[in-house]
Length: 526
Image (cartoon, rainbow, N blue to C red; front, top):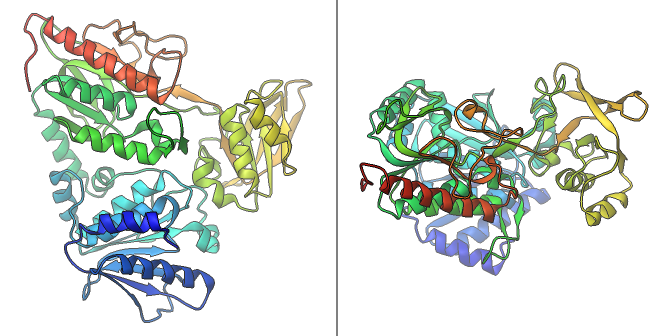
């Protein structure tokens, strides 16, 4: 099951184990159980510190499943189904953390995680093609490995389709705590701990508020933000990076084949590499926090203030805004009501949950047509709706789409409403722009693929924005506010690419440094 290359990589990783790890399997005689045992046996062959054993069958256990634990203990890290695809990394990290290798998280965050009150039992539903799921699975696995009263079961939705249906899971990752819904979508350990213990979040906010002013504060954790932070730190000035999530939009990208020197990679891998790289520099990385406003200096020489959603304020002599963009919404009745209950934005993540069902894709650009092509291999039927009179996707994608018998394409269609029964999506209503007629399409899911919006709503009235809400910058990344710079997809830059965003980040950081050394006080080294 593991090829030679994967086995070699796994052997390198498992050299970091400090204590023995036991894989205890709950299996039956089915094909899925045989594959699970094959995987566990191959892992055990790679390291002398890993053993695989068959547990005593539990009538209440999910089959197949297995526990990652220490011999003689009951560490609560469990996988139900085969954690392959994106989740293979989650399994490797679970082995390492249970085996004593310390998580790469802030020490204060780990201390707050260990101090949580238990018992807590988490369940996370994931799909093997989901790029957002590993962050959640890995965070909860880490918490389980740290805390003796926390357990976590990561459940592969395709292997437990009846359970997915019974619980009404229509978007992954979906997290349950003690049987009740806890969260939906990407979450890191910091956000999970803050939700479980609001007081710890208040303590963190108080600590952030006491920090001395930075020389450069970068807001955003994607390619632009990470590059800006690294370039600033290399100048020897006091630098911080504030981000809701490290990696930014890159994490939502399936395949990347146009980044120089990297023939092909996945967004999650590049996002992890960006975070690892920036942490090699002298940068204060503040994650799982959202900036809500920027206040320019009230008097010459005073720092710029960046307010956070938790009430804290960070001060800095210069600020680089690199908040990227987010999915554009339809803005029609029913969309918000049925978000994650049939309305979704990620065909890679949630497509497997609609196997054998009818779905709609809204958007006829490259992303919409690619989504329809992907979903055609899973769904019973796909209806693609495009507002314009013709699709806007590349010709090669359109040719592939037209060859699919399970896809209907409707152009000149204006989406009017997402229909539902109060619990989940049941249909989509659109109006023909040709004759005004109204049509209802019975579907179980709606995949919205109509582009991106710059994440700049928090900057309105502070820096200059164009009619599309993008930050207006000059060729040096300067905004119309002294000391405030911007880079990447949140700006009016004509091309939204990873490589151009990284270049913009470098430009903005170098311009911020130039601003500092030309200011009356001169730059202060960190």
